[in-house]
Length: 247
Ligand code: ADP
Ligand code: MG
Ligand code: MG
View (cartoon, rainbow, N blue to C red):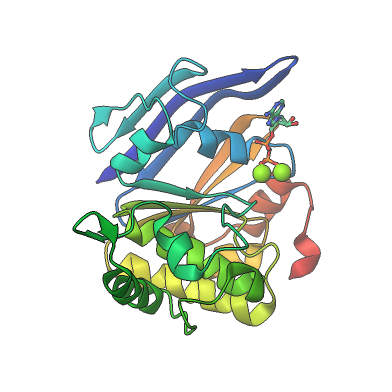
C-alpha cells in the first residue's frame, strides 16, 4: 500500500522556482531514495513534506496514510510520525546525549525532571541505533557518525513512522556509513518507512527499493530498484555524473 503521495508540488522562493509539479509516491515499508544533482530541489521537497515550509507556502497536495495532510509546522508533521533529519544536524553541542534526546520532553516525576528515568530511556533509544556511549557524554565530544546516530535515536523518541534522512552519509566515513545503512535495513524489518536523499549509487543499490530522481525542480524518473534492477544509465543521466566517482 501507498504510505505517502505528494502530488504536483510547486514551491517558489523569491526569484527561484525550486519545485515545479513534483510527484512522489512512497510505499509503506520501503526505503525510498531521492537523488539528483545539487540544487535539484531534494531538500526543499522534504522540507515541504515535514512542515518546515507550511501548508500555504507551496501548491499541490500531500496525501499521507490515505488522507490529505496540511502540516502547519514541524510539530504537526512529527505528530503524524514524520521525522526529518536535516543535513545540518539539530543537536546542541554543549549538552549531553540524554539532554539532546529529550530537549524539553524529559520524563518528569512530581514536576521535576526524573534523570534516572531519562537515562534509562536514553539507553533504550541508544540501543536501537547501536550507540554505545555514556549518555552523559556531551555531543561535542563525540564524532559526526555518533552524532548522526543521536539524531536518529531522537526520531525514535518521537514515535517515528516515516524517517527522512537528508544526505545522512555525506560527512561520514566508510564504517559509519555502513552502520547507518544497516540500521535503515533493520528499521525496514520493523515496518519503518524511510526516505533517504543520496547521491551515492552504491548506497542506493544496496538499500533502496525505489528511486525518484529530481532535476531542476522536476521529477524525471521513478524506478523500482528491487523489481527492475538499477538501470545505471538512466540514473546516471538523471544525476548528470555528480558524485559517481564514489563508486
Ligand atoms: P538540493 O537539496 O537538491 O541540493 P535544494 O532543495 O536545497 O536542492 O534547492 C533547490 C533550489 O532552491 C536551489 O536553486 C536553491 O538555491 C533554492 N533554494 C533552496 N532553499 C532556498 C531558500 N531558503 N531561499 C531561496 N532559495 C532557496
Ligand atoms: Mg544541496
Ligand atoms: Mg539538499
